Length: 281
Image 1 (cartoon, rainbow, N blue to C red):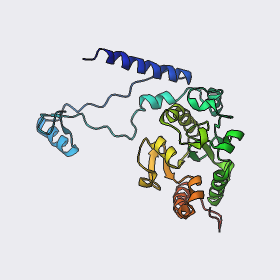
Image 2: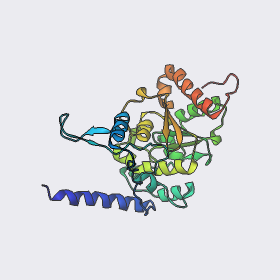
Image 3: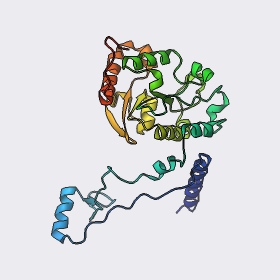
Image 4: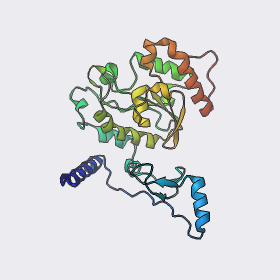
């Protein structure tokens, strides 16, 4: 056996704990234990219920391996928060505190060439939050998300929904501009994502709209292309999440605008919004 494995695992855990301490997070809790099978049920009755619930599973080792009765599956609805979901809930947190925690950030290599950290902007109690990929040139200079050409198109999309920019909240997965507007790398996303999750927890929106593949893949924790799930609803941290194309993509591919408008109409229907007559991005 490799005697170095436990040490490696311990070092990784210590690294994560130090990272969360930097965020002001020090309390961790175990998930709630799964409920046990009621003991009063007879053997035949228990086996029948297990078969109906798909409770007989194979032990690792192949299809011919012996079977045992699995613990009944827990329902996701109402389950206790996971370790990292709890960790992201900072006691006494606020958008101002999160912004302060990010001040002068040097946690990843993106800080070397940035001009400004681009935190987020909009209504701190918004029902609708748009999440993009990361700042571009104009955003880096101004410290405000979506102020370039793609931002102007996003403004038109928001107005077409019957809203104004100050009625929604706009943020990005990473807070610093990647060099030459390249796609953020995995370690950069992993470093910044906890801050975005804290923002979303504080805002507590009804709907989160992910703009583009990077934001969608990061929040949904998937490697699938956005074309596989664009326009579909997902449950996300007490909100509904939908992915659609990034405004920058629409500038290059205007033929995709009708698809995005169809997505936005689903969002409006869920929020009970009626677009102004004749409005469309």
